[in-house]
Amino acid sequence: MTDSVAQAYDACEAIARREAKNFYYAFLALPKPKRAAVCAVYAFMRHADDLADDERIPREQRLLQSQDWLHEWHSAAAGTFTGNPVFVALRDAQQRFGIPMELLDQLVQGTMLDLTGLATAAEVATYPTFDDLYRYCYFVASVVGLVCIRIFGYSDTRAKALAEQTGIAFQLTNILRDVREDAERGRIYLPLDDLKRFHLTTEQFISNRGNRKLTPDERDLMEMEAARARQYYSAAESLLPLISRDSRAALWVLVTIYRRLLGRIEKAQYQVFSARVTVPTGEKIWILARGLWMALRLRFAQRD
Image (cartoon, rainbow, N blue to C red; front, side):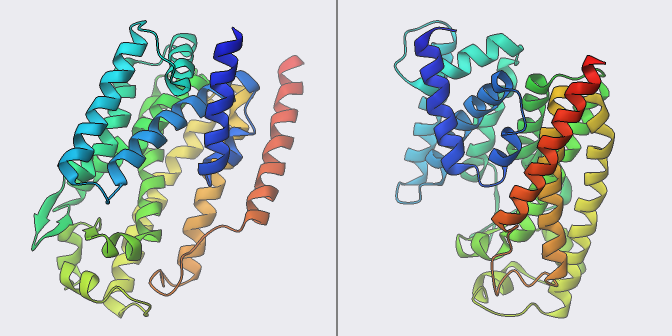
């Protein structure tokens, strides 16, 4: 690895360390070359996400900026000189771990879905059915998992479907946690079909999004979505043994943190409007410590 590539990876790791609230703890349980590659992917996706989410800029301009970012990446991947450390590191990671270009394109396409892919109902951004929401979750979360398992290494093609489903579980958890913040931005990710099932409307969430308790119907809806997420988390249990030994601990750390987050949402009776639910840093560090011990045991078992 040249000095310039090593420096590019260092820059990406600094971005991940600063921005990746949950993911970075899992990254630390990876061997250094794999951690560097995952950080490069994260930095690439983080910038694309920031471009799409900057609401100070008109939507059309954000879309153009996102498309420009993707074009710049294509040029860098083709060998055009770039001074952008994210592209330098990502190109090395892509070649080193055989990451399909299509998946990297989909990472950026996923960040653009909030600009192009939402239906509208009374000027509120929505998804009509769970199938529609699933597609969104696939692009913004499952694709990340499909990229990561290329870096982790896997022994069975079943890992692809299981990584997709694990990503769905993560994103459903994020959606439950962020209901209030999303409503403040005019977005309701809970499917319209599900709202109707519980006699709810998007207007209720948008107009009554302040610090408050959920109604019984809202809580029942959230409980149903949490149960759906739990079903998808079962895929992670089957995925873990298919991942290369030196990466299993990292996946375990990430899944455990997200499962704990879902558990805390459930324990709070889904009262996400009154306070933001998080996994405390101390708890994440404890999970990481257990993951590092797992990684050490797996390393010694592999030698035997």
